[in-house]
Amino acid sequence: MSVLAALVLVTGCGGGGSNVDCGLDGCTVTFPRSGDAAVSVLGVEARLVGVQDGTAQLAVAGQQVTVPVGGQTEAGGFTVAVEQVTDTEVVVRVRA
Image (cartoon, rainbow, N blue to C red; front, top):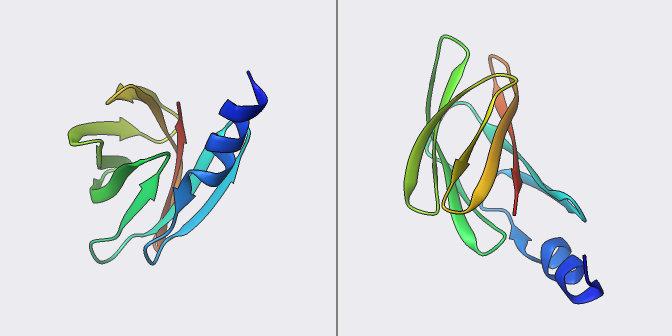
């Protein structure tokens, strides 16, 4: 990975009421489980749509995906993984 690409990854995250933590290997977003929170992650919008039976419904880069805890999928050219679902929050990892 080039230094410029690493810099883009680190600076490419921004929160909108959610906790966003970015590093060289992507961004971790902690969404509140209640409400409709959206964040800018790596230049695209990520939003928690809902949670049912330990599975999160997310919209990433305009594409809606369903991901179980511990699972991952591709959305809009990004890898989206759900790391944790609790009564109060959903932790999602987004990588380019």
